[in-house]
Amino acid sequence: MFVSFSGEEQGLVGSRLYLERPVAPVSSTKAMINIDHASIGNGRLTVGVTGLEKKVVLDAGQAAGLADKLDVYGFFPGGDHVPFKEAGIPTITIVSGGVHPHFHQPTDSANTINPEILQTVARYVLALAWQLANTQ
Image (cartoon, rainbow, N blue to C red):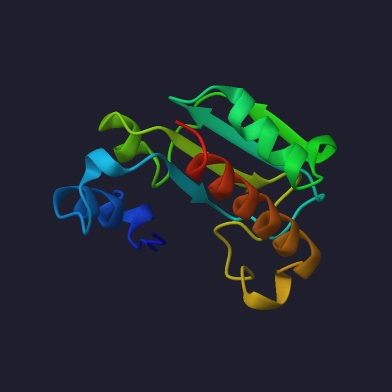
């Protein structure tokens, strides 16, 4: 299932509301994949993971041909994934690496998107979703 949230900067309003009124049972959620400002930067992907073995995200990177572009860490503070972590749901946050000069700026607009980085993120998320769907 794909869910898009709003209100992150106003206190994670959308993600908290979803957990209060989920469309599907929260217990059936394998993981929350949070994609945040992931279309600018240097082409690397910074991945934060909690509640899952890092091997899952690394294997997805290998399957997508992106193993050399991943920097994998533990929990990222702040973001729509936090309420899911607090609810005991594994989380994966994907952020494009490098400097994001337009982040939270009036210049943060569609024309600053790098289509190649966006395609890399999409390829990785597809491999990650496939990996999660096919693991216990």
